[in-house]
Structure formats: structure tokens, C-alpha cells
Amino acid sequence: DTGVSQNPRHKITKRGQNVTFRCDPISEHNRLYWYRQTLGQGPEFLTYFQNEAQLEKSRLLSDRFSAERPKGSFSTLEIQRTEQGDSAMYLCASSALQGGTEAFFGQGTRLTVV
Amino acid sequence: GQNIDQPTEMTATEGAIVQINCTYQTSGFNGLFWYQQHAGEAPTFLSYNVLDGLEEKGRFSSFLSRSKGYSYLLLKELQMKDSASYLCAVRAGGFKTIFGAGTRLFVKA
Image (cartoon, rainbow over all chains, first blue to last red; front, side, top):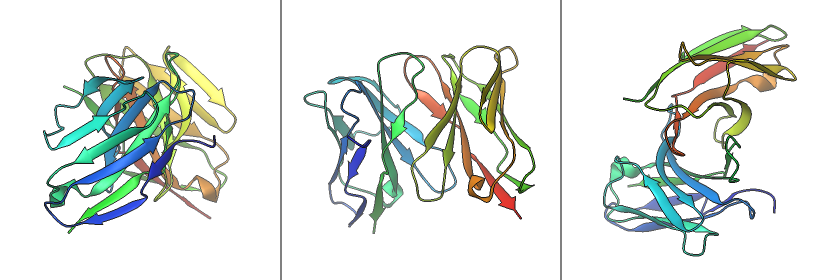
């Protein structure tokens, strides 16, 4: 296991379409995070899982966004009815249960909505 | 509210020392992280502070003052490869980590 893996790396979609991204965290990590990052900004928190439980979700996340982590391993992030404003880099990160442990980020999925 | 401030850009010379400041106002505090991010790549962990004081790790050091809501990242013996964005992030209440917009550091020869 070499780190956090995200697929696809790039996605171009037409406005109004649905898209789904996948994240495979480091195998022994219980915590999984999704972030969104636009050019010139830091990552913006979207949601957090501990094992299969979604414990926190940003108020900025509209109803068009949903995330799952069905077996406490990989996670998916779905965006329905995409809008041009959804164009961004979507980053997944994972960390161990111990407090203070840093998060390891995947390479991200770059979404472009045209 | 939640707010993290850091300078937008800094320029320094190869071999020099640079200090990147970060101030924060968050509803909770469970630690402060510094990450490095090269263009087009994922952020990578540099340091973590939860208690006041200085943490040193090779050419990188990070300082925290919780009473002042202030941290800095110190980079010594700058190398060209240190040109990157440096992200200050606070773990606020729960497990939510809030990132600043990042400081773009340019290292010139």
C-alpha cells in the first residue's frame, strides 16, 4: 500500500451530469476526509468519516453532494446535476485514529464542468 | 467564525532563512498543521503543534502560541525545491481541519 489513491485523476463533464469519484485510503487508516480546492485557495473541508460513519459534513455542501464509505474502506463522492462552479480539485485524505496524526492526501480528482 | 490568515506570497533567496506567519481565529483548537503543496500536487505534511513552543525537524521548524492565535513556519538553508505553497491548517472542534489559503514561496538563485 503506497498511499491514498483517487480515481479518476481527471474528469470533464457537461453541466447537469452526475459524477462519482472514488478514494482508497491507506489501509489501516480509520479516518477519511474529502476536501475541495480551487486555484489559489487552501483545501476546503467537505466531509469526514470515521470507519463507515459520516460524522461531520460541511454546511457549505449542498444537497447535490453525497459521500459514502459503505464498508469503512474506500469512499465515493457523488455530485449530482453538476454546475460550472463545481469545477475544482477534489482531494481525499486519510489518517489514523490517534489524535494529532497528520492526514495523508491523495493526488486528487480534477473536475472540469463545461 | 473560523478564519486563518497567512501572507499570499513571499520571495526569498537560496540559502537564506524565511519565516511564514499564520494567525487564526477558530471556534475550537486541537492542533495546528503546516503542509507543503507543490503546484498540481497533493499537500504533504510538514509539522504539527498542539502545545506552545517550537518544534524542530531538520531544516523546518514550527512555532505555536495558542494565547495569541499565532504560528510560524521557519525554513532554513532554502533550496530551489522549497518553492511551493505552504498551508497553515487548524484542527478546530471535532475532526474538521480548516486550511488557510496558503503562502506561495518563491526561492530565487
